[in-house]
Image 1: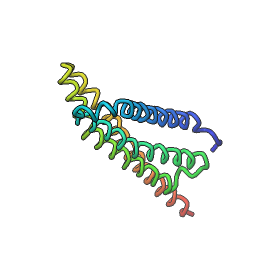
Image 2: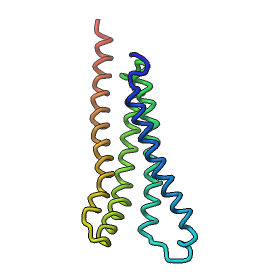
Image 3: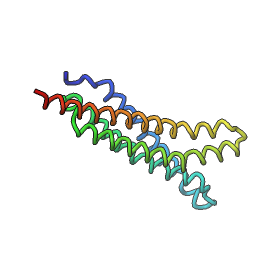
Length: 162
């Protein structure tokens, strides 16, 4: 396959990484600038859950981005129909499951409580968006992993046929 045929996908993965890095950076900046006042007053535990959840979700997110880069390398080098690609898709699936759980446990309740305090029930829906995205990624990578496994089996049987 022509080298660089996945350039647009690589750019989108880099942009996704930059966006998550910026979100973590903004949260760190807010935490450090407001840290002195937080020690003087009672800290809102819901905010602590949100900050912890964001950083916890960033770990599997960046692992999934790394596995995506590996998968794109396999595609560019002609190794798309190998077990390495299946392993990369499996790792992406597990990372998306971890992000889904973290977003459902930390993100959805945070936005639900925030929506109740503001009188805006739409905020609860906002908390479900990252969970929904992670769920779609889980479903897509699971199906793709299954199809790729079946294609590898069919390819190996076809290679053995005389």
